[in-house]
Image (cartoon, rainbow, N blue to C red; front, top):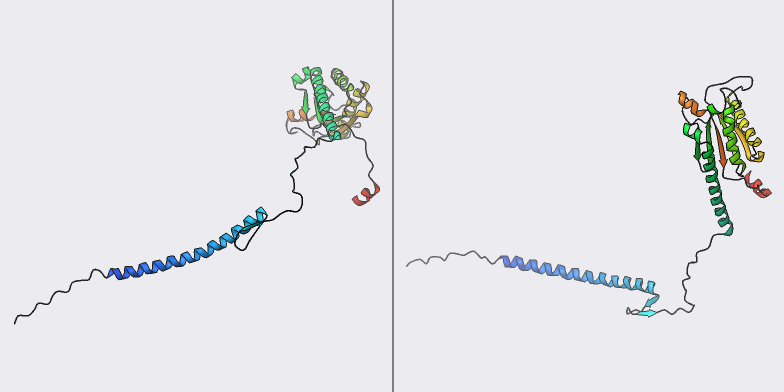
Length: 267
């Protein structure tokens, strides 16, 4: 009797369907959980959104989410237009006065420039405009012999021309004397302090004699303390030896006495 040949067992190629079905089931469960979580958060977001909307629109939400209008019993607030205030009369007058002073100062500087044009061209005189006014810087080589405070005859005419321009104004005038750092020790000038102060006073006297009021004049001697260039060179020392005439645009104001309480608090 012939043996029956066992049928060869074939490999099952459909086993992957079991794993795939399990994976699809787990994925479905995951999305169900995510949907549930997102539904809860969406509800919270809706509550927050309603609260913010009600807060900015003066409405109150009902439990069901419907807004209820809030009626204001008072009169509504009306926005008022912004009114641009005009400047105080005192401030406006002060600004107009400053403009007038600037105009006068420019006119004075122009007249002085015309009167001293030859010296300006030689570099012996410089006109400087500062926040305080106009400064005329004159090299002392055309004013005084070395070590003296006596004006040279040739410089008296230049100083007289400046004085004629200043006599027609009411600006305060400060005359500053400056020297280099070369020491001086004579019976008349023990130091550069005395020399610079005396030179400034000499110019002051000439201005006063030419018609400039004495109450407008001030003389100061700085000696060697305010150089404009280094004193280590001959050119620098020559520039530092100068007389500066400051035409001050700030007129002095009337002093006001402080109350006794303010002076006591300041102590």
